[in-house]
Every structure is written in structure tokens, then in C-alpha cells.
Length: 147
Image 1 (tube, rainbow, N blue to C red):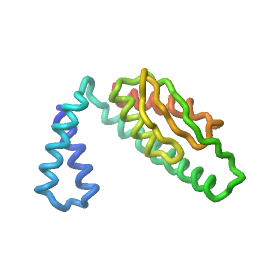
Image 2 (image 1 turned 120 degrees about the horizontal axis):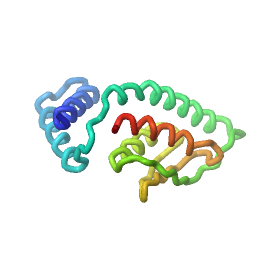
Image 3 (image 1 turned 45 degrees about the horizontal axis):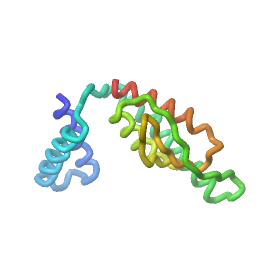
């Protein structure tokens, strides 16, 4: 079942990125990506697709807000800017931390550079913002997806 889900996920991703062009090459790439993902990140628990779909609107909204915040900081030098690194403890599996790090890195203003000992290393534009609470909330949402 995990292989079938990953096949569907990678096929959908291929279709979105290529607008359906190159089906023969896409089939090879989708099969290779699915095989490699199963080798590198074996499934221990099934993803809850309903929970995954439920976090998408919030992700899009927070990405939009983050983009507006970054744009405001770039255009108005009076806004606070205190870049730096913070370490945030996250109670997720290794795969969950990778997924959370990828999600956070897609949001403007944050970049996850890695994880060690159950903690994410995050670069932020303003260390005074409550990034820790935001990341913990997102980790709880991601935990529901991963079971």
C-alpha cells in the first residue's frame, strides 16, 4: 500500500511539474523515485491522507502571511530584523522531522538547516518572534499526518 501511495504521489507531482508532458520518461522517473523513497525512508506508519489534506489550507495561508512579512521587511528598513539560528525540540520520528523541515523551509522567513538529537536547527529573520510556538504547532499537525 505504501508503494502505491508513493507512486500516486510522485505521478501527481510529475504531472503538475510537467503539465502532463513526457509520459514515458515520467513513468520511469516515477518508478525510480518511488523505489528510492522506499529504500531511503521506509514506511513504518501509514500517512493519514485526510490529515495531510487538512493541513494544506493552513500551510498556504501561513506561506502567504510569511511572504507578506518578508516583503514588508525588505521594503521598510524600520521593521525589526534580527536574523539568527534557533534550535527547536521536536517530538517526531526522523521522517516526520524531515517532512516538517521541508515544510518550514518552503515558508518565507524560515530555513531548516538540519536536525540532531530531536531538535531542528532553524534560521529565522527575527529571533524575537515566537517561532518556537509556531514550529511546535506545526509539528503537532505533522504528527497527526504521520500517526
